[in-house]
Length: 451
Ligand code: F0G
Image 1 (tube, rainbow, N blue to C red):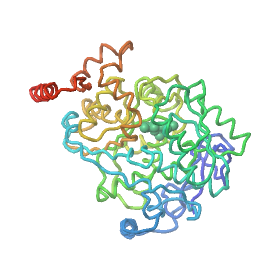
Image 2: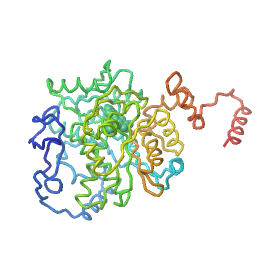
Image 3: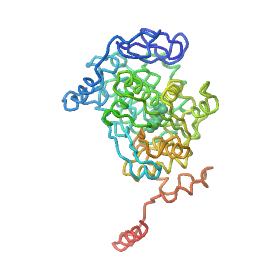
């Protein structure tokens, strides 16, 4: 049986309150598993020894099952999750995302062995689905009528879909004008009550926290430890795809820092269970205009985090006060990872480079490649090491960004205009022509000469 404990004071409540915070000290809660977590309160020993090869064989066998839960890339790993009865499980067959080789990006970054786990290939096109299937199911088990989240767009899209599948109402709080149309349209189509608040993401979080104390709505932001449990399966699935041989590095974008916390938690647990024999270094990359965690680590040695007003075109990670920073710090320290920041132009170029490998992703995901290039230059990543980038969202989440980039308009009138010259060789603006065969042939021949 999984138990909750506070990450700061170690209190172990029997259940969580509406805001999922420790009643004693106000910090975040996490699940641990007395059966097998090595890091137990008061140094207690795990009660059981599971057989790692039996678990691996069981999970693999479920890939051929016709059962909906076995077909989910989250519920397939349920032995490592808290128990939620099957009748409450809401699944869209999330997870099961591909691991792609990135040969062109590898050349650009100066490494030999580079892969991307594309979490944008989930049902609502972002990594949020893996955590949402589990947390929405826990809301269903708790018989909630309403679920709610504050979001930069992906959490809300995912929540709205899972709430609809589970016959629950959903309330979305998003910053007005600061989320992409793709994400907004999802939440509308899936039937959420969508409120665009005249504030930023951090302002939306504040209002939601007050709301859940007054109204019986179930909070689905990543402070909810069920979200972290579902999301951790991405790392388990990744290790299975790598035949349980960990890469040297995993690189993730950092926004509210739930994802890095979840992936790190899975790595610790897989090590405890002897599913893997060593920990990869997990590095976290932030946009320079939304870098509170980078500053916390670099300026204050992780002793404190100063909230900031965030600004970046990678709107998914436009977050100034990340909730899970202490969990992420623990992962960074325990795995020996690094934290980096990247500029707006570096993000945009990296996004086009991932696109040119035939993969594509949304801007926030591209910070991983931009960060890898910096980590390679600093010598933290060596040319012969193996690296996995976690791509968090699909290219089509934010087509506006992509079109503006290729038309050369993305940075017009911004302080990044002069740096943006570096992006020119990557831009592929559409060619407008008269409807004549000769014009198309001329365009084809010109492209051939330039290729
Ligand atoms: N990438 C994408 C595409 C995201 O949507 C997010 C977060 C992140 C990276 C950062 O992940 O917050 O776990 O560190 N999006 C949230 C949302 C905040 O509301 O959709 P994180």
